[in-house]
Length: 462
Image 1: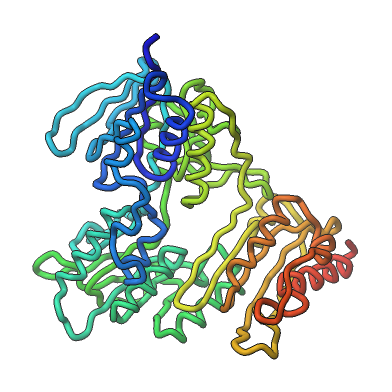
Image 2: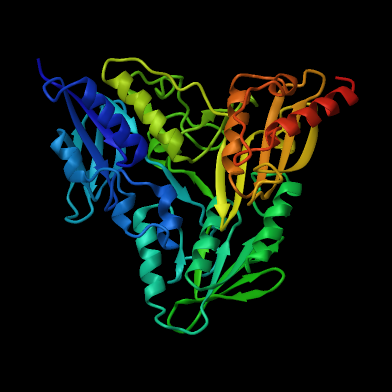
């Protein structure tokens, strides 16, 4: 019997995790695997790019988990610098373009995995394509940015403008600061980190100011200014102009689903592909999708969301590879957990913000506490702010946000587990968390927040 052919579009986390897991379950005699990647790199950590740019990660190759040669040694036909330009669902084939030679050809498939990722939001503004304006979604993007910085030479004063103040924005602001740039962050929102409520975002703003990063809120960009040579010289907003030798886009990303949409595959309200629990594309028996190009179920809100994170992408790939390879796996959904940092300030969130709760019709209470990451008398104890949101009357935990230092961010994992389990804040107060003075006060900050939220629920008649 001839081997089935699995075609994978996209050679990073979801795509190559799916290919690798399928290969573990089925050998090349039973399953031929062909994967297409349009970039120069495969199986790398996009989340590590800001730390490579900032110098915390010494070499680009440190971010690569597995090289194309390593994949090929495992009988995965990974074709680099090859872009899939057309998907024929009815004919079960894809059209590929070799970006080096210009040759195009069709490849048939029995099973297909779409893992096309996401692309940086790049507004259609004058000058947006100028030299010195960079997104940072791929290793190719990161290399282009570093090459651009090198081209500036030994200029005495170097200015970087970061457009956007989400995760990528604040991480790239830190990277530019470490490289000796004067950094300005232009944020069109009320406060940086729109994934937090504004009161928690204000804490991030204050900390960034203290680090020497100028953050301008309510600053909608209107134009990228350029000099005679076509290179960026500044960024114009409705309120003023900011000089720049380099501009980094941290506005966010959107699912890369144009190919799939043109082929008639279903997408959701956030333009991500829609799948079932097995990561199979809705209505298509032999097509799966995973990673940053899909929408996932928010277990708290009960709606689909688009969340571009490597953790999800790798899990999607494992599930897809298991199902393609004859095993079984499901991906039930997420609670929206994410962590980040800017210098020594740690930022974490999980579950719903206040506006998310309102959007799905939930009535809620909130509580915010100040604590420390260690016992107050233990050397090195640093402040931490925890905000908790719970459903009115039932006390069900809806969300947690943490801003602080000294181990603040990973405390959000306790809340993520509680959210996944559907726990109430009252039940959380009895959690048996680890305690010793170097690691926590007697009452961990998350539990202090839970106690205060219980009081808020009772005070509101819960």
